[in-house]
Image 1 (tube, rainbow, N blue to C red):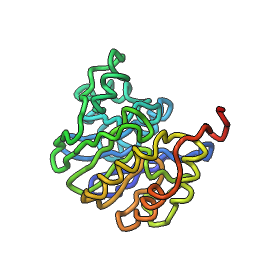
Image 2 (tube, one colour; image 1 turned 90 degrees about the vertical axis):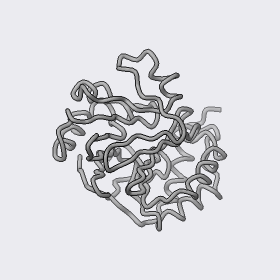
Image 3 (cartoon, helix red, strand yellow; image 1 turned 30 degrees about the vertical axis):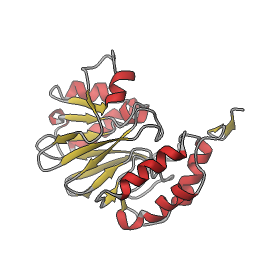
Length: 241
């Protein structure tokens, strides 16, 4: 159920899919002088994620645990990764550090603001504040060396997806957003799309789904610009009001 693939140079996708949920879950390992893990997976998956990391490097050498927003699949294993890698630091948005991780039973995180940068060695991470793209405290991560965007829950694709795809799954993406109700604001998403249009993106590596080359991203962007997908009173298919 776990697999690891090098999808860009020294960037590894660790994916878990069990068929019990509509999506798979991916963590991204960046191998460098200062290794980084983007997303941790939920708490029970820690050992499986760690075992996949061990195929590439010693988990104790991780230096950054990056949490794009505060949610179980993004940060459920954070305390265990921090404990195994004593030299590591949590990295999250400044907003997340103030509203979600303040006073948590973990070392104080590095709170990143828009355009803050972390140097890993060959790779360079730039942080984008993206509030209300799923969560209030959301940020995205752009790896500038390879041109890879890590958008967390944006560009989601349901099902068991391969490491990379050029398939147009934008219709399934929109339907999943409508059914689950995770996106509070179409305007917030479209503001972010305007920013992404100006960036030299080569690939998008979402948390749920396959890596999408920039050339195959157009139908996803078009769907998000033209179709309704924000919360309208339904959560996981159940009406709230």
